[in-house]
Length: 395
Image 1 (cartoon, rainbow, N blue to C red):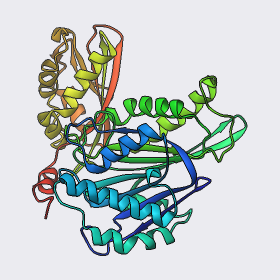
Image 2: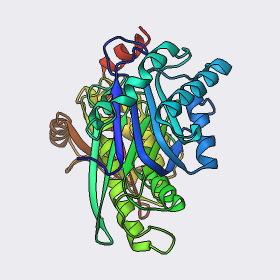
Image 3: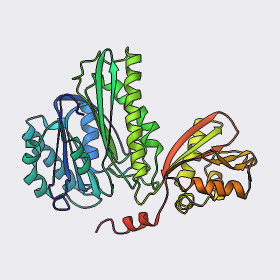
Image 4: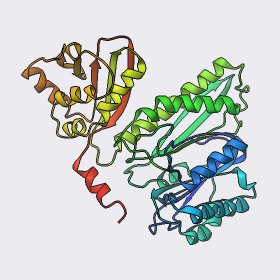
């Protein structure tokens, strides 16, 4: 599958390692409406700062250049100058305005970019542009990921077929606020900037902002969507409520696929778990409880050990800051109820629940019985491999 008017390319530039794809390019033949959401960390990488400013001014872009191997974060004036120089290199090679370039980096924080890697590879990268390299770019943005992450959707809008293709990277430092690690979506939809930004922000809130691997937020998190209008569908604007809903549903479905791929590929993870909290007074209360449980290291290590230790779950709930009556709480693993009205159901139920924990994917269902609020957060287990991966990440 490809998206009309878009081309991609990837090369092994040697940003950090040799003979490994690490520099990717996404290019639209014409300027594309572009929306982005970015890390809310006070510590922002140079490319994030540049992208935010450019999108404020333009709301359009024509290229995304992304490297792995070096985050270009906490690199001061030199890091900013390097990013701007790389942007200039690409815009010259593509013959497009410099402000039409969006930049993205991922890797070790604090290292300066190896400029020779970009200087020696930029023309080769541009010369390699084709409609068939989307998967190669998805590989080029990987760091501790074990698999590339891509997804696609098609939707009929006004009698025209609209295509969306997305990629993401992320396996650790995952509990974003407004974005998650790196994700890029291209679409041939014809849509206004306010509508694209609204669709992206809402979709991210219900997908990427509902996942956690380790409770950490990156300095480089971003999600970018480029829409070049080549599908020639009726313009999606403030009057196109129905078409906007169709587009947003497709975008959100695609982003949810990518978000769950990130959780499933969490560093050292062996299980993907949905924490579903219902019966809260408000949806926001349900989310707080679910997120506290999903981030608990004790809960996550119990999942890894396949131990139905519900005491860790209710203990995490108790420090969520949400008021509830513990004597009314029900907890179930999939359909196996292990706690009813705050009390253990019994050994037989615990044995059945332990069997559920042996599965690769399962749900933890919590009913507070306080109201109608309900939310989900997606997490993974916490394994010995997570510690090993992050103990020697810079080596």
